[in-house]
Length: 516
Image (cartoon, rainbow, N blue to C red; front, side):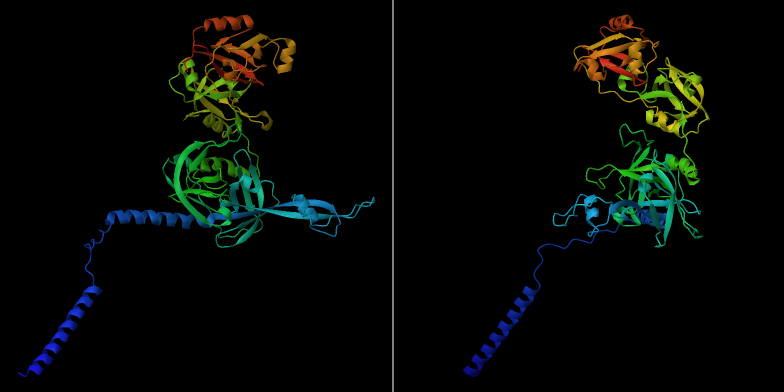
């Protein structure tokens, strides 16, 4: 073959080889070799698990669909009326009312001696809450604090229908109120069903429905975190709250807490927070408490409460030891009021009430709420512990008057050990009895002085207290008091029954031999 042809053929083959290698490299670069082997796709969840999740999801949806139509948003207004002189600056008084006087706002000139013409000025202060329609007559259950001291109320349903409403009845002691739609009530009004709050268990799932921050028909979910809560120490309200971690915020008040059966088990009422909004701890009034209240309120009636006529206190571990009890459950009687239901039934100081009308008494709160929920005139069974033995008494309840206060003895200060007793007493005289509001014939000793930081001071004793018992023995005067203290020598604590402001309470004073 001609050398030139051979050279040309070689050149052609070389170029072809170059192109082929280039294409190969380009293709390889376009599809880089993976650095790791792709993982296999995750296995699908078991059908049994998915079925359970779908059922729970469907339950939430069904409950929300069932209850939301019966939940209303409540808009309230307070009208503030002021009479003010005519002015060229009509908003000047408004800003002064709120303490926001603008330095640039012209001030009124000095008024002339004659009286200027007066006219009325109104300021509308709005508020918002929630409520639950509970019957076809248009009655709505809500919180008392939602409608307290307001002049105008409007409610809005989930379908955007709006109605004027009026207050029918309120009960500040339970923070419950009933309002009603004004005028003709729609025949298709949806209603909610009140469930059994006693059957609620800690851990049960619940939904909260309301209008937090003005967002109506908001649904949140959580669980029942606790039962039998009281939020305000020393309050004379009747509190037996369900605690929940379902989100509750301003505007939720009066709305329902609902179980997964679609029944209302609580009326959302309060939150525990340091930031003014939801912090995981919300409180709802039990539906059973509402059941006993709302029918009377719906009729415009007054709530009457039973009264046993005793002062009671919780059983601390120290009191448990002093009275040789086996449990801290129950409420110990520190005072029986003369001619009261308890007095006539035979209840005595130092009795421990452990059951009320067949129900266990856990503490002061449960007994106090149970008595208050019982109508005056009702005969109730009391099971008490006296000297270690159970005894059943029957009491016919009196009516609790608003001015009479409540039955729980006010707590004393904390109890710790100290070096000396530090108390000086004297006999009760006619003048002292008059000053302290006592009968001059009562038996006991008056505390004249309490040494600072002494065991008596630490236990809460103070001048003017009236000591009637020491270690469960009656003292008639200073001599009995000294004898009782001598008998108590060597003890780590001394039990005293002390009367203050006409109310008696057991107080334990730690002595110098007490161990820290």
